[in-house]
Length: 203
Image (cartoon, rainbow, N blue to C red; front, side):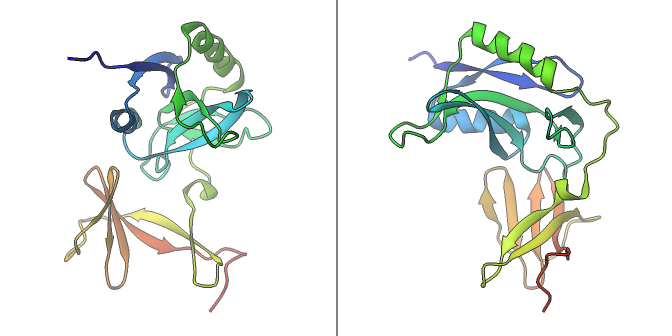
């Protein structure tokens, strides 16, 4: 039996120091392991270019603020008002500059240790009582005319009745009812509520 290939990344958890973790490098196992660590579906933000074609990315649960995950660390200036909620993974990956190369990359232990020191220096740890800003829980759809339609996921007090068959997307189930759309994650249900902002188009 072939030995599982692993790659190194950096994990930061609320209230803890950064640490090196090892994730499966195989395509399907890789994504599932990241979802396991981050406790759900995730999104990635390019943080900075390590060398031409390769960048350090930050992976976070893309519903962390909605799910009420603990505040972790603040981004460096000028984005200090932005907070990472829940766990985050820092990893090296191709950044799309060369279309023939894609995917994540293993980092040496020395590189991980260097980045861990930089994270501790530049990502201020949260106190633990910070609350999401209104914009942290705002998401956007696009209407037929290409206008952005803002909305929020609001947790339901009880499981909605008469739900249709779900559409599976990673760790999330979406239900499109006749009147409203719902989302289920980890046994919790959320309803999609349109939000009107100063930039919203009024009918």
